[in-house]
Image (cartoon, rainbow, N blue to C red; front, side, top):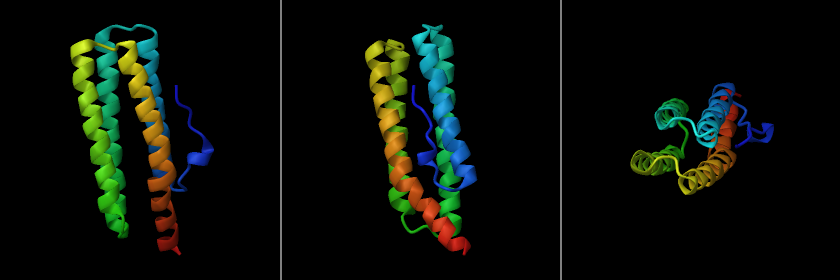
Length: 134
């Protein structure tokens, strides 16, 4: 499980809410894996997590574009790299099922990536938007 911490807040309510939902969606997926839920349920939760992440990235990028955020290309590149890794894992999940090594690796990847990305990249968006508002 990964826990949302207030220290991860970027200071933009819309983004913070979406980040919290990403954590919740991932935790729902993990709970299904740990409870040995039917593979179909695990797959549905993972697909939903993937779709929600893409929606969040799209919304975040629209916000960056509208505000003239200078690091949008770098930020978008990180989003694309995350999506590519998730697509790779989705194929592995489809072929192997939610094996312990796959779920453990995915947990490490997503928790590390989310915390690092939010702490570094998304906080920069928050600072930019706060400066733009003044």
